[in-house]
Amino acid sequence: MSLPAPAAEVPPAAPARPLRTRWLILAVLCLAQVTVVLDNTVLTVAVPVLTAELGASTADVQWTINAYALVQSGLLITAGGVVDRYGRRRMLLAGLVLFGLGSLLAALAGSTGQLVAARAGMGVGGALLVTSTLAVAMQVFDAAERPRAIGVWAAASALGFAAGPPVGGAILAHFPWEAIFLVNIPIVLLCLAAGAVLVPESRDPAGGRFDLAGVALSTAGLTAVVYAIIAGPERGWSSAPVLGAAVGGALLLAAFVRWELRVAHPMLDMGLFRNRRFVGAISGVVLITFGATGALFLLTQHLQFVRGYPAWEAGLRMVPFALSIVVLNLAGVAARLIHRLGTAAAIAVGMTLLAGGLLLVTHAPSDGYGVLLAGLLTMGTGCALANPAIVEAVMSAIPPEKAGSGAGVDGTMTEVGSSLGVAVLGAVLNARFAALLPAALAGAGSFPAALAAAATDAERGQVTAAFRAASETGQTVGAGAVLAGGLLAAWLLRRAQRAG
Picture 1 (spheres, rainbow, N blue to C red):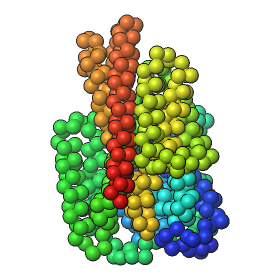
Picture 2 (picture 1 turned 30 degrees about the horizontal axis):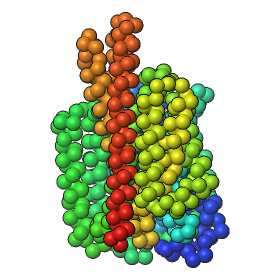
Picture 3 (picture 1 turned 135 degrees about the horizontal axis):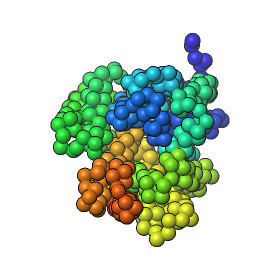
Picture 4 (picture 1 turned 90 degrees about the vertical axis):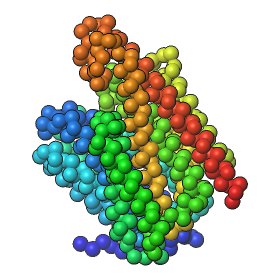
């Protein structure tokens, strides 16, 4: 079936006269982005159900969750180049189709192998959607409105991240696990219909020949590196599979850079990395997402294991964090503050607020929800300010015709930083927890295992106290990384501004 022609076509640069339907287009883009990001976390509450109904082992469940993120992160740079070269509207619609088909196959899966394969297929569609949604937003909004549009897009990502556990829990409370994937289908159909009618086509006029070798090298290299980061905590950082994947991935990425410098039509223009503003922005993306994602990951564990909330309820208590980001961006407050402060200062102030909120939640003497709420709102305010600023810094350093490539780099750095944050801060927590456990429970690999092995109430109390102290250590390290990343990014951007 052929798709209807778009209402208009825009050139690679932002149109001189803004489209009347641009905010409707942004709503479609954000709905797609929320769905894609939500699927990173929505399965965390379905682990017991999948284990029981599919006979899934721990490794099976981990691959079911990780296959989506692994494939998506490995393909983001490739997807960015494809989006620019073959049309942003076309790839948006293709991403929706692939994501919808993957969701349908996941719902029909009769084994964990089929479910992992379907999740990997969803990751392919997700990579196209993450890059095309941001690239389309860059085309349909002019320079004056673009910061607010990027802020709303970033808020949609934050909402999707935080909404995964409560949405998954609410679905599982009333429906079988297949409904987690079936709910994606009507959203995909709605976005397909609206996107086909509303979204104008745009592409890089100088796209050139398809860089197949660059695609192969970047995809294989990034997939191997992200696999090593994900598998490191479980298999051991010095194990042969992890070391082999890390070294092999690094060599493939080095070969990718060398190839892109020589090929006539590179998939990713390496000249971007001579732009100080671009380098400063992507460095900030890695460091900020490292600290923020890792610390939030530990916070959700703290709420479950120390405070005793189920996973979906812990996610529900985290919702004010995401909602504050959404409200501040939809109301335009964040965009006005970024304009008044400047990009560099907005990143520094925002990340300072995020770090302060993390420290408040971690070290407040009270376990009441009031303190947690205050910390989450402080963190949300910081993210509402810093996240759009850092995305704007990345995208404004790139020519408009390369918007897809910029979105691919931004998404890749976000995935790498997030994966590193969960892996490294998780390792900090595990090492500290093991060191604080009573001698009788030494060797327990996790909090649930240590709690199950505890023979008395006193030992169970020691286990809980050890985990609380370990999570506080990890979250403090995460807050420090957030603050350091924000200040470093602000300094690099300020230096680039002076040099320019």
